[in-house]
Length: 282
Image (cartoon, rainbow, N blue to C red; front, side, top):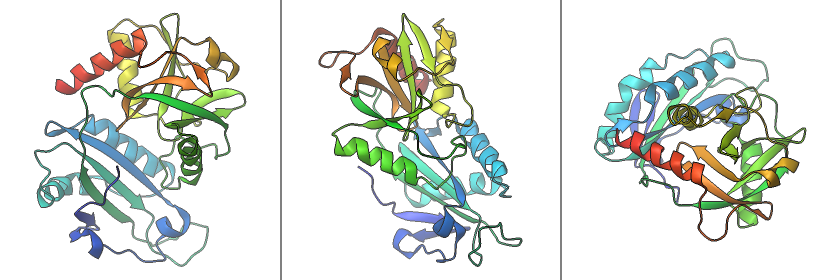
C-alpha cells in the first residue's frame, strides 16, 4: 500500500514531508507540466539506474525542459541517509516540473524548474506471485505516451476502472491494437514466441520492458515487437505485465477470457520471472 515518505528533497533542501511546500502557481500543479521517474533500490543498488536516468533526461528534452539531472544524482545519497534507507530496499520517486510562473499555456521564459525526490521502503519479492485479472479499454489519452509526464489523469481513470471491477490493470486498445497498460507494459506469448507493442509514441518504453527483451535474447526466446489485436488476445497462450514495482506479473485473465486455471503460470512467463529474479541477485 502507498505511504507518505518521512522526508522530501525539494530544490536542494531535505525537509520533513509535512513541511515540503510548492507554489500554487507551479506549472506541475497547474498543468501537469513536468516529468517523473521511479527507480527501485535492491540490495543496496538502484536496479538499472543509468537506464532510468537516461530516460528521465530524454523525457525532459522532449518537452524542452532544461535541467541538469546530475544535481539529483549527487543528492540521492544524502536523501537516503536522511530517511535511513541506505541499506534497505526502497522506491525512489523523482519529479521535475517547469517551475513557477503566471498561468499561461505557452512556456515561460525565465522560470526555474522545481525538482523533488523522496524514497519509501519497498519489499520486492524474488518473483511476483500475482496472477492478475485485467480489463481492456479504448485508448482515450494523447499520442505521446513515450513521455513520462506527470499528467496522468488518463492512466488514473483507467486504473480506477480496473479496481472497480476487482482487477489489477487496464490494457489500452488503440485502433484495435493493444498498446500498454495504465502503469505497466504488456507482453503476450503464442507458440513460445513473445509479442509486445513496439517502442514508439504510443507506449512508454519501460526499463523493465527493456530488461525483459534482453532476457529473451539471452534465453533464445523469439521476440516480435508487434502489437496484438484485441480479437487476437483469445488466441494467445500466455500474457504478463512488466514495471519497476510490478517486475514481471503473470496475467491469468483478460476481459473474462482465462489463460490458466487457479494459480497456474505459463512456461515462458515462469522462465522469464526466474531469469529476472537471478538478474536482481547478480
